[in-house]
Length: 287
Image 1 (cartoon, rainbow, N blue to C red):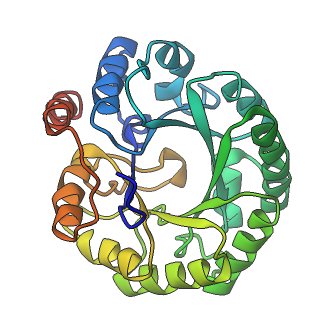
Image 2 (image 1 turned 135 degrees about the vertical axis):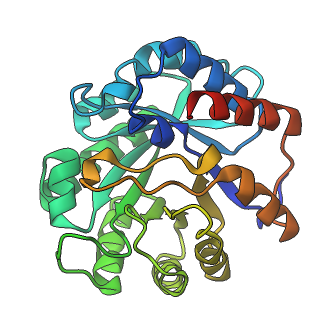
């Protein structure tokens, strides 16, 4: 389990749930998340401390986290936050080890997603990093629209690297490149991820990729070839950002990513029984 070349899988039920059109009950979420905690994923992106008006599906995150059983798992709980107030609240939960902040290289999407400019959001990252340092939490910054955007905003790989450097200079050591609306090609994933890894050798560079069903393998291959060893996914490939203003493009399907990584020799051991149970629950609640 200590091999450094295993891929760190971040399972993202929060991303799957947040845009789901049918409101899921708190009990359903707790049952699903507790089953996922038994699988052995390195990180579980379980919920978010954000405005319930913006993301109604996440309005019960406080109740959910209190009911999660982390007593017999090494899986880290990650919560998404969008402002300092959310970070302060998330940091009070001992079960939550990681906070995730979406920072967009697209000005339009940053306004849509967090109602703030990039510079305002950068200042939030600075303050949130201080909160994390003071409370023993890790901060992961997602570079949203990291491979382009549908709004016509300026985009270059250099822009991504420049923001990555600024964020890393604040003490953030994990940055995830997010293909928020599934625009990236496999070649682009490889080139942009390679550039980020080279520019920030002291940081862990992950990828949070979105792709239509059946069109993910090339992107994952590109990330792996670039040296990336942190990949986000969600069972059944459900997910997407409801704040992007377009049709949701799904996450990488974890149940397909797992055998792919196993064949590459990059998969840490998982509890296959708990995985099958989790997939059965996902098939029931996401239908």
